[in-house]
Length: 117
Length: 111
Image (cartoon, rainbow over all chains, first blue to last red):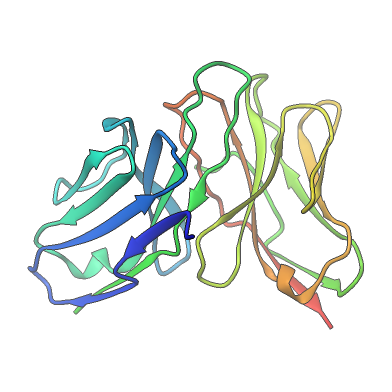
C-alpha cells in the first residue's frame, strides 16, 4: 500500500542517454513534485504539477521534462544525460491548498538513485 | 536560499527528549513553520507544522516563540529510530510557493 511510489529505485546509465523515472501516488492528491538531492545532500525542488498543470518550474535545464498523464502520475524524462545529473530524485505529492489557512504536508516517495557514468 | 538556521548536528540520549532549535528571524505573517525529517537516504517525512500556536501530534511537539522568530521541535522520548536529518522550513500556504530545504540538523540518538 505504498502511498508514493517511484520506479526504478536505481538507475545506472551512460552519458548522452535518455531515461525516464516514473512516479505514482494513490493518495488522491492533486499536486505532485519532483525534487533533486545532490551528493552534498541538498534537496531542491525542480517542478510541481497541480491537476496536470505545471505550477513551479525551477531553473532546471530543458533536458528535464516532466510529464503528467493524469493527476496520479508525474514522470520525469531526462534527455542527453550528463555526469552532473547523478543524484537522488524524489517524487512527492500533497493535497491542493485551495485557500489561505490550509497548509498540507508533502508525502515523499522512496527516491530514485541515478548514476551517470 | 533557506530562510531558516539550524545547528548542523546534535546528540541526544535514547529515552530523553530531543529539542531541536530553529531560527527564522525573517518569517512573515503568513508563513508557516514546517518540520520534516530524512532517515538515512529515504524520502523526507513530514513531522508537524504550525503558524503561531504550539502544536502537538503523535510524533512531536512544536513550540513557536511569541514573536515567531524561532521555534523548537520536541521529540518527547527519542529512540534510535529517530536518528535522522531534521529540516525546519518556512513557507506560505499558496501553491506557487515552494518548500526550500536547508542543511538541517543531523540528530544522533545515543544508546
